[in-house]
Amino acid sequence: MPIRIFVPLDSAARAVGADETAAAIQQEAARRGEPVELVRNGSRGMFWLEPLVEVQTGAARIAYGPVGAGDVASLFDAGFLHGGAHELAQGPTEELPYLRDQQRLTFARVGVIAPLSLAEYQAQHGYAGLRRALTLPPEAIVDEVSAAGLRGRGGAAFPTGIKWRTVAQAEADQKYILCNADEGDSGTFSDRMVMEGDPFMLLEGMTIAAIAVGATRGYIYVRSEYPQALAILREAATLAARAGLLGDDILGSGRSFHLEVRQAAGSYVCGEETAMMESLEGKRGIVRAKPPLPALSGLYGKPSVVNNVISLASVPRILANGATAYAAHGSGRSRGTLPIQLGGNIRRGGLVERAFGVTLRELLYDYGGGSASGRPIRAVQVGGPLGAYLTEAQFDLPLDYEAFAAADAVLGHGGVVVFDDTVDMLQQARHAMAFCAAESCGKCTPCRIGSTRGVELIDQLRAGEATAAPRLRELCAIMRKASMCAMGGMTPYPVLSALDHFPEDFATGACPAVAQGEAR
Image 1 (cartoon, rainbow, N blue to C red):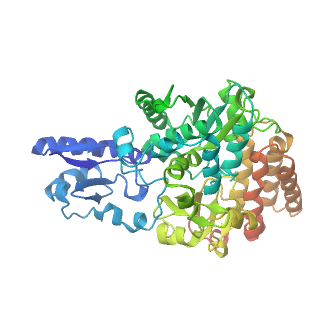
Image 2: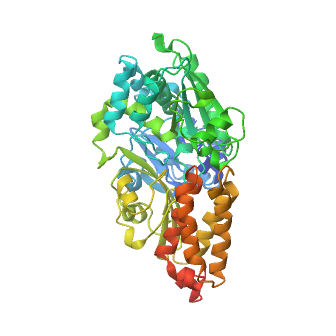
C-alpha cells in the first residue's frame, strides 16, 4: 500500500517552495521505486516550518520542515517514509506544542484532509450540521446559533443570531446569503486558509444559514488576490452540487440553495458590507448610507445575511455538536474560539485558534516565541491596519471584545502584527492616515478629506510644529463621529493610540532606539 505524504497547497506554503518540494518527492520516490501517495493538504498554520511535509506512519503523522526540494533526497536516505530521524524531523505533528496547546474548532480539519475530498470531509463529521439543520424548523436553527453566542468574526462582532433572525422575519420573494471573503487587513489570512484548506465547511455553513432564513441564493465575494481560493471554492461548489448538497432539493429535503463564487473588485473598502453589495451588483464599490440595513434591504434591495468566512465556517460545528458545547469556550460575552493570526516581526508566525480570553503575552511568547529580530517587542497592532497599537503594559489584556473596547482598541478579524523597539510610531500613524487616503471610496468628506489633512498634520508634527498635535486630535474626533463607515471611523484608532502610548516619537521624530543611533 502506498505511503501517504502530505505537502500543503496553501498559498503561504507554495510561496516558499511547496510545489517544488512536492515535485521533488514524487520524482525521488519514482527513482527509488517507492510507492507513495502525495496528498496536497491545507497548511497547519506553522508558517516558519513551511513547506511542512508530513508522513503517515500508522496512526500518527510525522512532520518534517521546512523542507526544500534540495532536502528531499536526504530525507529518503534517512528513511523518512517510516518516520526516520533527520535534522528536519519535528516529531508527531499533533504533538507539536504550537498545535497541541490550541483549541481547534473551526480549524479542526484544516491541514488534516485533502481540501477537495468530499469523502474525507464527511468522514471528519462534515455535513453533520447540515443534516441536523434539515430536521429542525428554521427558527430552531436561529435559536441554536443565538444560544451559541456566535458573533461576527469580521470585526464588528455583531451577534449572528440577531442578524439571521431579522432576515428570517423579513417578508420578501428573494433572500440572499452573502459571504464577505474580501480579506484585506494586513496580517490576516484565516479566511484564505479556510477557503484553501477546508472549503466544504464554508459551503455547509452558508447552506445552513440559507435554510435558517429562507434564502435560496448566495454569493462568496473573494478578494482578487486569492486566485487559488477562488479556484478551490468553485471546484468545491461543483462537487457539492453533484452530491446533492447544493442546488435544488438538497439531500431530498425540498430545500434549494444556489451558490456563486465571485471575484472581488480589488478595493479595500469593498470589505465593507454595503460597498461589497454595490460591487456584486456591478456598480462602483462605494459605501451605502444606513439605514436601511442589509438585513432588510441588501443585495438588489432584498433581505440579505452578510457574514464573513470565519463566522459562517463556525456554524456547522454549532449545529453538529450543539450550542452548549460551543458556548462552553470563551469568556464573558465572547463565546467560542477565534483564529488569531501572528505576523510582522515574530519568530513563529502563523495561525493560533484559541478560546476568547487568551492574552497577547501568551500569543506573543508562548506561541510566537518573541520577535524575529531578537529585540524587545515595543508595539503590537491588533485588528488590521485600522486597529489600535498596544504597548508591553497591555500584553496581559485578554482577547475579548469587551476587554478590547474598554481599552479603546478593537479585536477585529484577529490579526496581530508585531513591531520591535526600532519601530517609528510617528511613521506608523502617518501610514494609517495615508492608507485611508489611498483606499477611501470618497463617499463622505470626513474620510476623503480628513485622511489627507491627517497626513499633512503628522508631517507638520515631524517638522516640529507642536500645535499640529491638538489639531490632529480634533480631526480624529471628527472622523470617528462623522464618517459613514469604519474606513474613516476607525482610522483614528492607530493614530490616537500611537500618540497616546508613544508620545516620545512625536516629540523627537523617532523612537528611542532609533534616536540613540541603533540600527533598524
